[in-house]
Length: 373
Image (tube, rainbow, N blue to C red; front, side, top):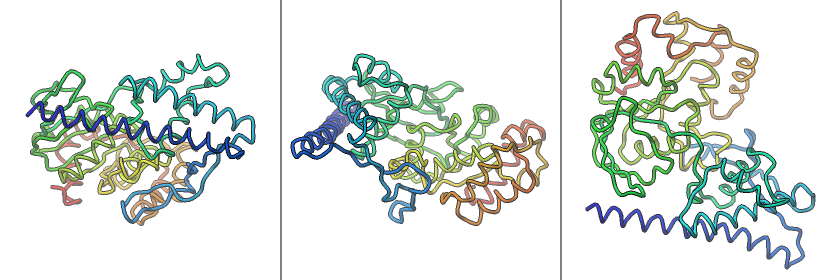
C-alpha cells in the first residue's frame, strides 16, 4: 500500500514539474517570437488591486477581473523587469525542475547576485516577480519548487493523515502522535492524504495564545474539533489545507480572530481570497468558512476589555466598507458598530471572565447559533 501511495505521488510530481516547465518556457518562447516579429517584447498581467477583483459565481470566491497592466521593454524599467523574468525562469527550469531542488523566496533574492545587471535590488522585487509568474502561468509557486521562508502553521485534532516526504511516507494522527504544539503543516500540502477522522468542524484560530488555550482546555476532544493555528495572516499552505479538508472531507470551517479590521482581513483571506493572491482564490479560499468573532457586537455584549481604535484602524474599517468582499449586511452592520463604539478587542480579552469562559461559554454559544454544534 505504501509503495502504491509513493508511486502515485511520484507520478503526480512528475506531471506537475512537466506542466511548470512547459508553461515557463512557453513564456520565454513568446518573448522570443516577439523579437523575431519585430514587436517590442511585452507581457500582460492582471492588475492586483481592490478595484480589479470580482465575484466568481462558478467558484464562489473573489478573483481578478479583466483589468491588466503591462510589462514592456518600451521603457528601461520594463526592459529590466523582463530581463529579470527570463533569468528567473532559466534558474527555475535548470536548477529547480531539472534537478529536483528548491529554494526559498529569500534565497532567490541572493541567488540573483550572480546575474549582473539582472539582479534584484530588494527582496520585495523578487517576490513580486514570482507572483507575476504565478498569474501568467496560472500555476502556484509550489509547482516551481519555491518554498516560503517562514515556518509552517500547526493543527491539532482528531484526524489521521499520510504525508509523503523525501524520506518516505509517514502516517500521523494529529492528536495521538504529536506534542501539544500540534502537527506542523508542510509548505506543499498536496503531499498529504487524508486517511480517517472524527472531526465535527474545523476552527481556524488567529493567535498562538488562543490556540494553546483551546488545546489546554481539551476543546478539541470535547467537541471533536480540528484546531488550526493561523499564525496571523495565514500562509498559503494553511489556507490550502483548510480548503482541502472542507471540500474533500465535508468538514465545516469557522474562523476565530481578534476583533479589529486587520483580523477581519485574515478571515477574508481564508473565506474569500486575498487581494494580493486573488489569482489563487479558487485554489486556496474556502467560501463556506464562517466568522465566529471576536465580533464588535461581542465587545458590547460581553463588556470585553478593549483598546481605542487608532486612526489607521478607522481608515482600514472605512476601506472595508468599500471592499467587495465585505459587501453584505452582516459585515456592514458589524463594521459600522465598531466605528461607532471606537473600540477593538483581542481574543485573549475573554480571559478577563475566567480562563475557561471562552471554551465553556463563548465558543459553544456562537457555534450553536451558527448551527455547527
